[in-house]
Length: 187
Length: 190
Figure (tube, rainbow over the protein chains, first blue to last red):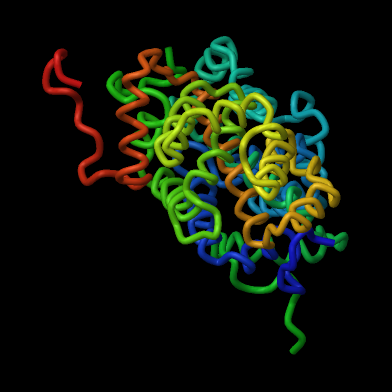
């Protein structure tokens, strides 16, 4: 049960976002600016960073919804690839650049000061630009905020994967917003 | 030295907020709403929440800036100092102690916020909105702290810098000034 009274039928972050629409607006604007672009890093790569950080923070709702969005972009229908990235990205066929960026994201999750010059150098060596490095750090930092918002208020994470698949399809088409449903409307 | 090239005259978060304006705008909007918008918590109380989270994340730039803002809004420097040292014995209300406790737990992780911590805040008179805002301010400052430290931005050591920054965020708030922050015209002028 959430720590505060949020509207019903609004799972995960949607509950507090419907409770406080004024703050939901810039939060969704930030998610769209960071995740809904292919400039430098692709949408799928950005969602993988969000998913990985959320899994390191053990935020079930965020890692499942962003994992579902990443899978939708990457053609990972059974979620096996995204699950492997969460488990141990070094063993996946991800590019060396993405592995280096995920290492930076993992350090940000532990604490900003954990990001080393060596990690940044390694990412540059694999072709990461300044902007790729900037965006990786900010996506990781932003998900340390989103994850804390979701879990700090004890929101409810649905267990049915189809709920996330349905919402993920909407996100890939329309971007992030506090609008819309998580479950298909009865017709 | 920062991990990416940033203007030298813009230390800490200020250079990052000029680096990508489209991500900076919603971060500024959220901060302005949470710290300066209408609320049953005073601006000073909200700056104390920002301060304790930044202090526990050991982010010198944010801690110094928001301590200064809290000091200016409260009209004294003791409260912020004591809150950082031990909020349970600091000269703040029982409600604020309960909210600072929630902020400190949120800093550790979202899952650290217990029903008991929430119950304590409710019992001390905190509303759901105050609890919501406390968690979100604490979460937002985890974003700021990790952004500022993750890119190894520079924290000036001269207290005069934070004097000026404190005046700016208390007097003008968190939105970008038109045209951004211009570099100093000469080295003698800051």
